[in-house]
Amino acid sequence: MVLRDALDQALAELSAAGVRSARRDSELLLLHILGVERPLLFAHPEHQLTEAQAADYRRLVARRIAAEPIQYITGEREFYGLRFTVTPDVLIPRPETEHLVEAALERISEDSPFRIADVGTGSGAIAVSLAVARPLATITALDISRAALIVAESNAATHEVADRIEFREADLLAGIADHSFDMVVSNPPYIAEVEVREYEPAGALFAGSTGLEIYRRLIPQAARVLRPGGWLLMEMGVGQQLQLRQLLEGWQEISVLPDLQGIARVVIARAPVA
Ligand code: GLN
Image (cartoon, rainbow, N blue to C red; front, side, top):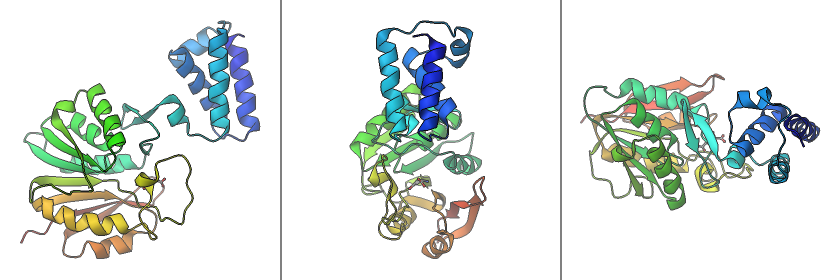
């Protein structure tokens, strides 16, 4: 089968199955099989696929039709301009989390050392993005999932920041010394357990019956490990702003940033000075 026919067939199947990004997905999956960049796909529409390639392609298209996220099928996801490896052991980085990275970068000095903890690092998207953008920063990336840490470590190695990120298997900030960080960042699980989600790791998504359980534990722990005046930045879920402000009682300079849809998405606060 030639490339163009394979693409057309996949596109028709994905569209018929109601996959919204059918065209893009049909291309991404074929690029993934061939290991080439996009322009090549269209430069050589008559290119002949091997039997094995055609069979692999059909298999991947079938997985996508079964609603598996495209990022788990190709094993990668772009975040903050960097390419990250993702596996079903980690949450797929979301574009709204880039707001958290931006807000953190605005507060990290460029010309002096800066100590950051990334709680629940998952794929390492936040930790690696910060390390790449701030060469003097050192980061402790924590996760309760050993499998996730392996993915994060490989992403740090890919982007050549592994020497400035310490990976640590821990429940939130357990075992971290008092007042040892200038900043704590986190995209914690914040989905209420009543919601139904397939595919991604439950431990990365769900936080008790209200979605606030992790914040309840994380905020006091962050207060302990931050230096006075240190920054806490957390991603939050839809409608959690008021409760989070309550949980941050005693913290200073509390502010909230919206995502591109106008949803309050990042909460920022400074640890009490006294
Ligand atoms: N934003 C993600 C979602 O709605 C959840 C991420 C999280 O729980 N931290 O799927």
